[in-house]
Image (cartoon, rainbow, N blue to C red; front, side, top):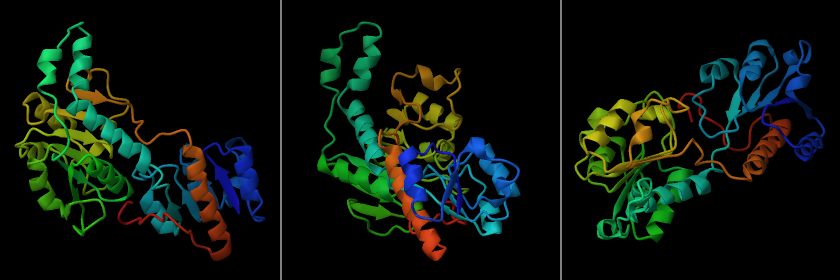
Amino acid sequence: MKILDLFNLTGEQRAKLESLGEVQVIEPAELNDNNIKNINGIYGWNKKAQNVLGQSTELKFVQSNSAGVDYMPLSDFADKGITLTNVSGIHAEPISEMVVAYVLAFARGIVTSQAARRDQKWIGDQVRMQNYTIKNRTAVIFGTGHIGRAIAEKLQAFGTRTVGVSRHGKPVAHFDQVVGDQKGVLQAAKADFVINIMPLTPTTRYFFNQAFFDQMTNQPIFINVGRGPSVDTKALIAALDQHQLAGAGLDVFESEPLPSDSPLWGMENVILTPHISGGFQEYGDEAFAILYQNIASFIQTGEAAINKVDLSAGY
């Protein structure tokens, strides 16, 4: 099984894969007109992978190095019978910690204090009485998978009420309540924190639009650690300007990098981070563990063991 490595496997990781006995790891520099036609699997995705997809007659397996796969040619995979897996699950801890950081930064006056710091203003008397605790506050979380559950668990530890929103609306651990998509909008209208971690699909693109923000009656904090294009940026900016939202914590954006002329840069009630919420030092090791398990299974059974993507659903 010839595997094209597009995610910088270490020497130890390559050796471990090749110790399976039927695996040859090919680095990008080793790809040529001869072996490109016989690539069986790809780890990662870029233009070289696209070339392999067009030329290999043996490609059967692709593993992304991300959880989201909206940037990949899913219809081509379906047409060619290619199995796609992702690294869903490894982001739950870092992203949930990031969300808690955003929530506490707003609740405890850190955002306001940092904005005043730029002008060397001491605003303790003003901010002290505006601060609040997140006990008995409500967080509505759009997405109840690995990450959503981890966020809900951490917020519940602070005494926050957690409402999950999913397609199925079925009960999920660490959520006080789970509702379907339509009822989720009604729940969000009354929330203190609205958190998006949904995957990007045709259904979720621009899900958070003007009509959504127009229903926000409680001036919540909006947090996006899901996918940038699920939010209509112009509508988000308008909602912030019109105080339909009290603030926003944003890690992903409709256009990345965020354009230099975006009004979001100058908004003092907005936390901006450059798509880093899912990153952590052990990322490569945890992603490899999933790859190794899937390659071993593919050799033995012809099927991936875990994290198989539903190509029709997009996640």
